[in-house]
Amino acid sequence: MEVGKFKTLSFDYKDKDSKLVRFDVEAYYHSEADELFIKSLSITGDFFAYPPDIIFEFERYFSDKKVSCSSLDKISSDLSKLVNEKKALLVGIRVDIIIKALAYFCEKFKKKG
Amino acid sequence: MAEDKVFEDKSKTDINFNSDNAWRLLITKTKSYKEQMAIDEANIEVVASGKSPPIVRVCYFERPSVSIGFFQSVYKEVNVPLCAKLGVEIFRRMTGGGAVYKDPRREINYSFIIPERDERVSLNVFESYKIICGAIIKGLNEEFGINAQFKPINDIVVSGKKISGNAQTRRDGVILQHGTILLDVDYDQMFSLLRVPKIKVTDKKIASVKDRVTSLSAVLGRKVLFDEVERAIIRGFEDYFKIKLIPDELTKGELKRERFLLNYKYGTEGWNFWR
Image (tube, rainbow over all chains, first blue to last red; front, side, top):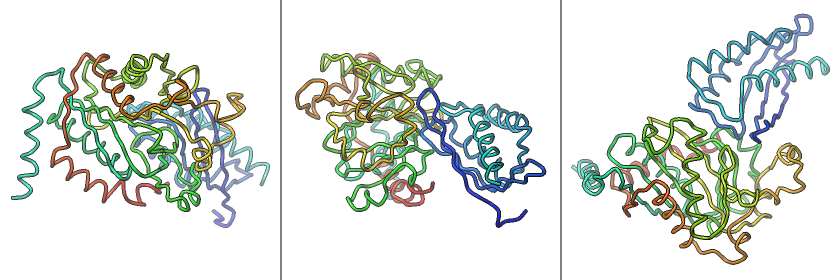
């Protein structure tokens, strides 16, 4: 991984119930593999999560994570599994919102190079 | 020896509150709102341990503050330099939700702590918001003759405008819900200190953030006194849950725990600025 090419991007998503989820990623896009090398993903906002630890589990999951932009289904499945294992209740944040953020980051990185 | 005395004092609670329908009423006055956060956690612990019945607490504080939700980034949500310049404290709640300006002259706050398996509330988070806000709504409507209503997930509104924000967490089998009731609003101060994201305003097609928030004074067209709102909160909980609130004080054990939590958690930069 070429450390110098890591870039930061932000994405805000507001759900219909008016909660705001803010994503900040530090990542490097590998164009040939169509993959994001995520150094860190921060998830903040005015949502609720019970238990709160589930958000940190998500963040840990993405720490130094390679994500294939063409197959985000696997990520979705992994995150849903985490939610089920923790018996977590998410209010104002959902797994599909996180996937939306990843798709956004993939697109942005593709355009920016 | 001193330690023993501190915890002996907790037996006072067992003696005074021997009925399912007698809950503790605490009125706490502090300089900083951070102390109120520490009291919340100390109260959670004592209810979780079974040594205290449910607690309704009315909170007064002296210093203007900005409160941020547990998951929020302080630098994204708050104008930190302006807060520092104006001497406005910033603190992080243990509950989720959004950032709010807390004006000690214009609001009353409450905390409610109850075991989550108590059949008078609900294990379901959405339902329990509705139930607990129902007590506040009942008190406000009966005391002031207004038409406050619950707006999911966690707001109380009058004529569609938010008059009370509420947040909840669950820990050790206990629900904590705390919230704010606005007596009046200093809109300029509120929105100068908060970085309200444009996305939150435009999505609802609301021209101004001011249109989303109201206060008891604005609704009633007169100055509203703290005593009136305190009475409404007490009346609301007693009538809604059909219980009696017994005035009480923090035990020595709770006070000791509050000091510890203030010094090592809620009063620290490590907690308040950790993200």
